[in-house]
Length: 244
Image 1 (cartoon, rainbow, N blue to C red):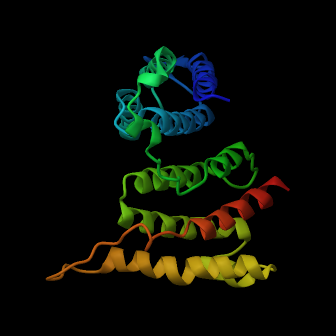
Image 2 (cartoon, rainbow, N blue to C red; image 1 turned 180 degrees about the horizontal axis):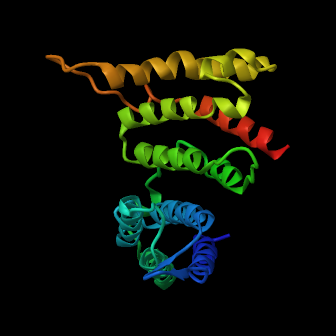
């Protein structure tokens, strides 16, 4: 499918959510599930628009402002205005793409976009889970913020967020700590990936969390905090366990 078609599907989903707002007291609100779904749609739309029109596109910037608005909201969900603004931004991008894609600057069309830290298909699988025992809201948000930090080259934040995920998920595996998750799983390949997260990523995160100011510093780069493969193995196993 073309990017315009993909964006049109996202607009339709956003409009569905917009239609489900309900008036409560003096304001309009939407369910938590719709709020989570909307946040995912904004993330996907940003990625598609960035791929086609560049990271500095005004349409992508409007979507970033919507994300900021949601983060600042007292209850953490989108407002009716947030959803309307996002719909207008994505529709504007679709119209812009449909006018004359040939006139777009080659440098924008060919610039490689950063690969998300958490793969979009893995995030979609997590969002689709319905668990009777575990609320995945925080896990999804950690993954979304991890992608945002990675895109913004906030490497210390990436390290800290990976560690936060490791501390968050052990109960899904009936374990108290992630060290037990890494040691107790029946599959050796899974254990090896988890030990990489436990022994390497945790130590790197600890260093960036606890190192005090020094006379000279060297900042981390993307390579130092790249644990995407092992993290994906972990998230895939969570999807498998909660799909049973």
